[in-house]
Image (cartoon, rainbow, N blue to C red; front, top):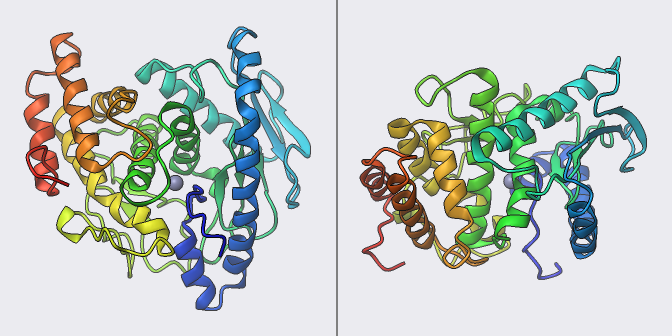
Length: 351
Ligand SMILES: [Zn+2]
């Protein structure tokens, strides 16, 4: 073990891949090994990104989409299969990826007033058919890699809108506040990706907070998966048999070993996830997402090691600003307080 647990993981968390590998799924074991390689690649990419970004800032900020076919290899940008404004492909996975990247960008622009992943029009690059039986989808620092799944535990990771939006949102976090991927800050990092994943899914499917199922990863679970999804924002811990997500701060263990899901980033994201769901039920998903997104820019409070309590503080501050501007209903502040109280997080209680 390298001792460095701060890498963001793929859509399928490493702890789940480990569990599947222990049950004899050799594709999960292979996926885990590849995911670790990719995490290292991302660290390199991030180092070089600042200079790249400066170039893009002067290039006019018009986002272009590029979909590459990895042709079941581990290569990035191997064969260009579709690009912005170009003809569609005969491969529907390519077209779906192109469309879903587009829908995510559209949501950012229309509902959050954000210009692409970095805020200044960064191109969106996806690589489909990544490797063989690859049970994951992952943000690599400047592009996406999407596996087809092994057809047993997982299927079609590139064909699911909440997967694509969740992974692209990890890119946004990279530029907005760089929440460290362990313990509470890591759970907030995961949480934000679930918020965006759900909001974009509802946008694409024409759903509301009331009509949505609030499941994460429901479109990618295969016949061997023991449940309906990977996570439930509405009822954390109920997505599948063995779901370890919690829905209340009483169940938060600050001493969980970092080797266990980076200190529980996917277990404890259930706490703010449920608070978001409760808020969205009061003011609507898009307004709640805009509030969270606005709060996430308050870097004085949401620093890279931010806690749930600090997140709540930032959300309340942003709520006040947006209420005063007439962009959110006056009751938003009490809705947010109540939602977080229901999951055991309050500004009054020390964390
Ligand atoms: Zn994630």
